Amino acid sequence: MNAQDFRTICGQFATGVTVITTTHNNVPIGFTANSFTSVSLEPAIVLFCLKTTSESNAAFQESKAFAINILSDAQEDVSNAFANPKNSQEARFANAALETHDLPVLKDTLGYLSGNIVKHEEMGDHIVYYGQVTDGKHYAGNPLLYAKGGYQRLP
Image 1 (tube, rainbow, N blue to C red):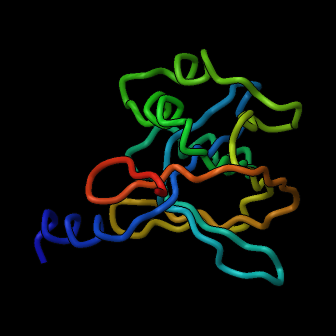
Image 2: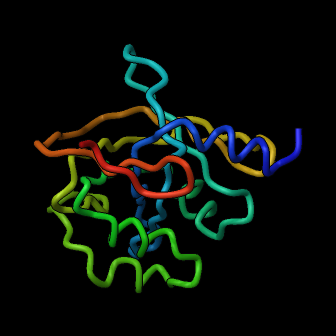
């Protein structure tokens, strides 16, 4: 199957939008992802994916920690800031209000999950990270969704 058809077909599936973060050498690192899912309830395991070419891979592999911030429908600007490959990590966090936490946890989200990376493996053009969740919190609101090549919102 060609890549464009694959992308178009997968784009029919609506996903939530997250910003996944860590801290490496006391520097916050983060990127926007919709490649996130729960894997197991017992123990609580999630996975997320990051392009193999991303400079952030070293930070996640060395820190072995993650926070998954689930964005609300009012956080399209946050998603865009963390998705833009031209933005430095400093620029991505410049306007991001953070909770008090060991990891970069964004304020005004629908919630977060944090924990430890227990495994990672290269799969195609991405690295798949598996993480055991040790902490989390949820808040009210509606999710920011992504489908058909753009942001979507619940009616």
